[in-house]
Length: 304
Image 1 (tube, rainbow, N blue to C red):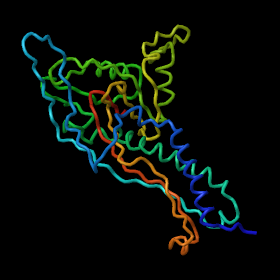
Image 2 (cartoon, one colour):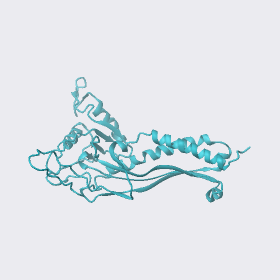
Image 3 (cartoon, rainbow, N blue to C red):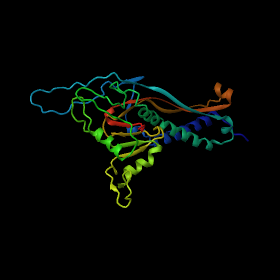
Image 4 (cartoon, helix red, strand yellow):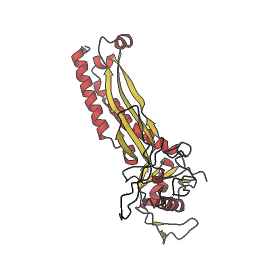
């Protein structure tokens, strides 16, 4: 005998599914929060025109000398996103709701990891898309104030020599007053194709140089334990990125206008339910992602 699908039963089911979604969403460990400065947004777009260097400390011998932040015309718009599933009415009538739980949990994980796609996608497109200074985020001609021309773009494949060069490059960056930024990178982000290479570079106590044959006495590996390894399927083949993520402003920015919220069309008298003989469950969010400080990222497309 088919279950009587009442309004109260549907509301109770929805309450349970929403709780399941929230647990899955809150329990996820997304990557974007580790790579981005995350803020709450209150408008359709946010202005980040204050991005740039803060003045360094100076000896106070007479009066304060306020250093005005260099302003840049940089805005990030919030976009709207959704993901929905349709469930036929028989699933409720035949009391097969247990089959829905994995789909709701998967929907929660999709919602939680969606910002990763946006943020890592920015890095992938950073060789052409512009940041706050009007240059491509990864470029060979960054210059602001008294910094001199600076380069955070590489083409080398991931290896011991190229990774050391990327780290040294970031550590040498100067601000718009010509002062050292004093940055120390802490993260290496790669795609699946570079995963094992990255593990060997960061976890091995010794390495064999290219062309070397002395496997018994490898050279010491100065890279061992220096960077945290992060892997994302959204990193294109051969690309890799060295990032500094431990500072207040990070290499990427992410803003939440509306965090993912779970909703449903389950009323028995709803026009869609009447015509399709099915219910809908879905998630909706509004958010935006953009570039932060290019000085905190050195990227290579591995094309060389």
